[in-house]
Length: 266
Image (tube, rainbow, N blue to C red):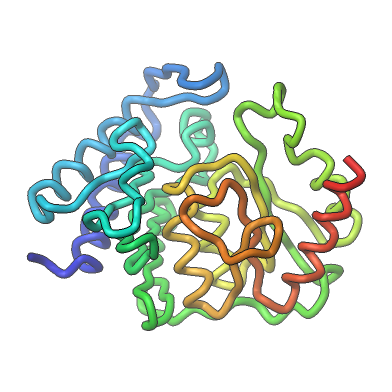
């Protein structure tokens, strides 16, 4: 059996090459849960490559992937190890030619991510972490930022595809956080938001209504870079969580409190 980290790095790079080759072409776009939740032929090709590789090298492992492969029961404690795959995070960006999208693979055992890889193909930046061994980008060890209060912070967030019909669509939280920070970025790729947080390019991040494959690799990257990851209530984050708050650690309670006030008022 190959080393999971080496396998994930090589496979993410191969998937990234597929995505780069198709990036400037006209894309066949289909809708999923809504007309703004889309999938392209590139998503499918990237997923197929990753899934085929996992099945060949780790036939006993389970797979949970964005484009409909596997179900959440794969995450039940005691089940076989499970790969959480996001073959193209930032599909709307990709389809529009906006250069912010990535590939993410994470291997979880007993509900805990042990290996994480996120690839930013356009910048040739590969991020990886293994539990207890730190987080890295292209051979450089990562450390979260040293920002000490929110007024010094650049933070990121996102909005659910179903935001038009959700009551908790993050608009109240966004309005509450924006006046108290240096800036808020809405990049459109959660896997890169969390990788950039681990690298100290961002100081905080929060989002709701995503799926385990969006957050799994980033969870480990941030924690291994010295950050903190919880849900909106401040409880330790888990693969079953439906929301996430991640920071450099120092800012965590302050960001949680601001988000909590917004949710109470809303």
